[in-house]
Image 1 (cartoon, one colour):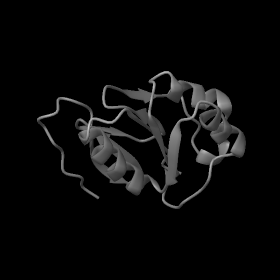
Image 2 (cartoon, one colour):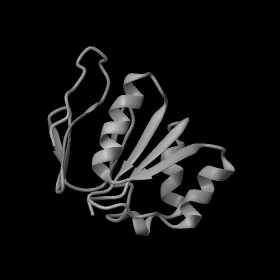
Image 3 (cartoon, helix red, strand yellow):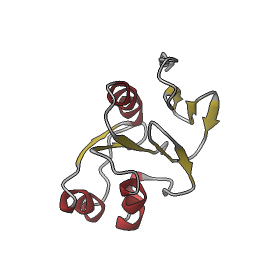
Length: 123
């Protein structure tokens, strides 16, 4: 799925999503990533959303999000309750969806100037 980029923002936006990669600023990532409007972070998430731990969620909190998106892969899969509990305690809203939907939501929310962080999984 190709996603149209808004080049006027000067921020990170998702160019395209496929089941085996996420393209940001012309770079294809083939493993789980964290994306904010200011950064793409690799090697901080497990391969699958089901393996997400509270320590992984701490990496998301470092970016002071107002909303967190979890893209769980090709199908909707919920992360463990313990990981979500960290966001509840910090009163941060979050949404869980398949990765394609999370990519579209990330671009939309960041385009509105929202402080959004997405944890995107391919499996």
